[in-house]
Image (cartoon, rainbow, N blue to C red; front, side):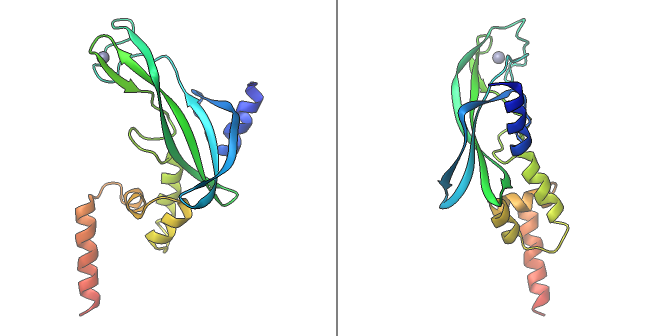
Length: 172
Ligand SMILES: [Zn+2]
């Protein structure tokens, strides 16, 4: 695939991680969770500089490519449709500590399946009056994700008790 085409995909989809390459069928409509959605298909691979488990560099320990793992990442909506990236992530095996780890992408936080852009959009919308359920629907994510994006530093238990407190007050 030419660089120009890859750039076009990156611009239209917000998939700006240069370690992601796209398949021949890189985008199509598909029904996900009952909704017609736009789906992108990419592969994430690179040569890791160190093992993410033991931390030794690839000059010290041998790190080999070890299959792939498919994950579905929620992107910002395009044409008002839920948008996902089906990403085939490279897995690696470290011969130093005999463990495996998966390639990470700048699009998402580690162990997260919702793009940073979506989290940012939710976080800024949270400053206006809009129900968390409404924001969750608009971004095709759960209300838990919305709550975490708006209040990144509060733990869920604290959030729940604060809501209970407000509810009790309003009934007095
Ligand atoms: Zn290791």
